[in-house]
Image 1 (cartoon, rainbow over the protein chains, first blue to last red):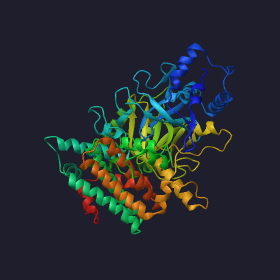
Image 2 (image 1 turned 90 degrees about the vertical axis):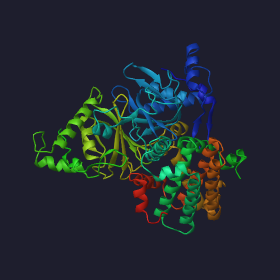
Image 3 (image 1 turned 30 degrees about the horizontal axis):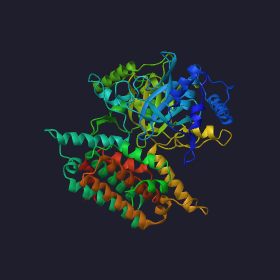
Image 4 (image 1 turned 180 degrees about the vertical axis):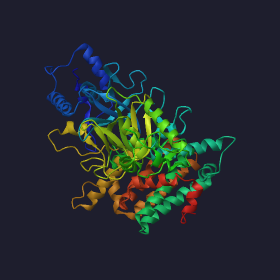
Length: 289
Length: 289
């Protein structure tokens, strides 16, 4: 399958972080439309830069160690949270299409054809970068999902814990997302919030006290920020800094929960900010001193 | 291959988060030693609980959708940072060994045998949980690595960015880890710190000003914590809370960088804390009011 990068090229730019970056123009759909009218070939009249990029992509595709079926593993990961969203396989055309379209695209082994995640559900995974592993037979699609990735409606496809299943094999299907530390803490705080709101509000806990007492929570946040600073001002050791930073994170995350703000939203703000220089960013924010 | 869970069973316990948990006893090595002296079979004299767990593991292994070669994909992910460390394949025995040993174990397709990550380098990946995906042909090993995972010495195997390679195909091998937002920010701050320390200290930036001025940094951290609280106290909208939390995170991460503390260390502190109840945790910390 010939894949054109001509539309994507129009939006190539170098970010302040010196990364070749293709903006979110939906090249994939443009390509499909283009190809149905005028197949792109190397002989078309295109800028030299375009031909050069196509050659570079071909060289890159040649460097992948495809297995005996012409496939490699592709893992889609949320660029903000790090959650592994899903895993599929790619052939040469699927990877080329993903590079061109900036939408995570796979090769379906059961249907023997390419499929772009989201082509039915519209929950695309918008690619920010693609990584090859050390022996070039495994790929990460680092991207931002438009919505839940799993066909079941779950945020990711990984929600069955082996240890839950071993503990309770006859029970209902485990529904416990593979959460890393920060999101496991976020989930615990969220559970405490639900307990506080229910008539049977379960065992007492420090988190529940904070959730029920705004003054206590805000005074703890200010206190923990101060204690973190003092580990630096008073030249305390690293372990004190890590411990105080853990306190800052935990208490501020209780406030996020009260305000219904997800850590993922905060990280998205940070990502948008540091794709421009600090000076540009500060100019763009009237409210920041 | 018969795998025994008898050693692991001795240390089975339920954590406060109600998760079946096998402590870090190195059952894998114990099993290998045991088997060389006395192969374990179902007819051995073992507690009823042991037989029951073995049966549950067998049922679970039966539920995995092994491919035509008897394999499934296994992705090792850092439980604290969410970094995808490596990806391999597992057969039935490799998954059984991982469940039993709590060390990430794979099936090597090239050498046609099991291998435990770390058996040569001692950089084991210590399993905290294992997840199956929705169609049960893909597995996450959620674990804590003892050291760098890649045989090259890199923290993970994913350090070749496709967009870097396309930008500079003749250049040196890309060495740009697949970092998600928080760790990308940490890396940027770390680069600014290196620039500040070098004779050519590059362009001016806000991060560099903070790194060079302790008073400014600590006053900003206290100010941002206060502004975050005020979004709650003054009932501001969610986007203000996300924005102020982003400020808190960024400024506190500059302090972490000055103190040479990694966010991963902070998350490890958090993980250890919330595996016990808040009340137990507070009792265990004499310094916390």
